[in-house]
Length: 617
Image (cartoon, rainbow, N blue to C red):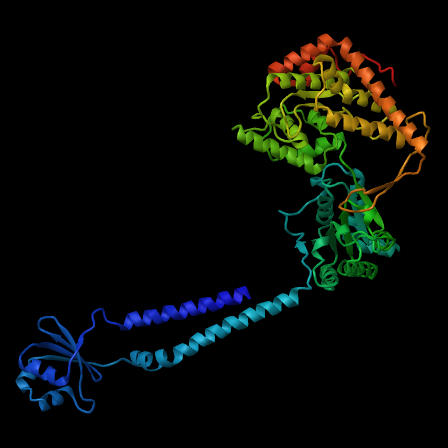
């Protein structure tokens, strides 16, 4: 409606503009005086008239003094006859220049037919054309409302082509998907032996682990069209539109077969039906039903494979996961240290890097980073290098970008008085020293008292090797490390502050998990409490208590015991190493940051050396 009103306004404006131009064109700059024909005769007799222009029956008169006048002659006769009848001498008439103007064929047509008759019809026709065009556009939108919005990547477009070489790590995933590639390249080889390739592949993994990239790589390796659509693009306000788009998507894919259909975030339409929370949406359920029918209706000779990605496999409808639909699941894990090194090298490939950048050290510091995090890390380092007017990305920018990704940007403008600065220094020194002395704690990579994000300071610890299993000894040493800041403040500042609040929260959660989830307490090898993972905004909202009040008191007692023992260990170490604490604090007060090499030198550690054994283990 808004566009229609806009078009009407344009037509009206054009009409007014043309009319105005016509008026300006036809109107003279100075309007001449109108006189009668007898007055014209008298002026000719008096010798005042210079020339007369005859335009049909209109007379345009120019006097000798430059004055312009206007008159009308008799329509039946000529001007000369009319003037003679008014008693003008022939000699006087011959002394006046008379110019008879004759209209050309175009001027006659313009003035006689086009302007008064055709122009209104032209304007009306233009207005009707605008109306019909608007209505046709609305009809075309209505007709295309149920068509698929999938974007197709042409395999011949080498600029947008992605292959397995562009995906670092994920060796097992590549092997699983390599069979899909082989089937798309040589389907007859499988059909001849009676093998049926999976019709659907479900990529599972945390956000940023490369699910979409892997799906593109499969299409690139196979050299087939790649139809990409998000699960949310199926669902509209009107019931039945999503199902129509699903039908159209699979219709396009079958025409382009062999092809790959990739549905990103399939949990948007594939949630468990009848689950209560998040269910009851008729349009979403109809869309899901259509997907199920289309996948189950594939013929064995049809070389169309559906790849879907989600980071919430627990909420998917069981009908999606049964054999014949998404019957193959490929897990995309977070990259290990070797894979992180390969990913970093891929993202550094087209960037000017300093030659002595230690990629292995960066991989060690980025434990738990996904592929997207690592890409963001290198990009942040590049932006930081431009800000510092460097032509190459150095190791310092890359290390600083790690901290920025984890904690946020530095807040150097934050005004901190010397007393608070010293408290933060003792706090971080306590964390760092405990982590350095205990054998099972993660080694310290950096200590800083510069505020980042919400943290007043930070101690960056990271394992030299990836860990998938954590022992009781590791948790006990980590508890002591977490409580190191709190104990250090109490010993060397004479009071405790609100700084360790997050440390205490993490320590309490870890100790409770040791007791209730991991069986690492005298209460025995069992779990306490049953979590009901109801989906509401992606969070757990309920926990069932399957133990008595006496057991609850025993759990609280074991949690307190673990924390008290960790605090005692931290206090003993910090008391014995008072001179080392003072050296660390003095260095931090002067330089604000302490890198691993300088820290190990102050503490007196050699590589991979841990001098203290925790008696609580």
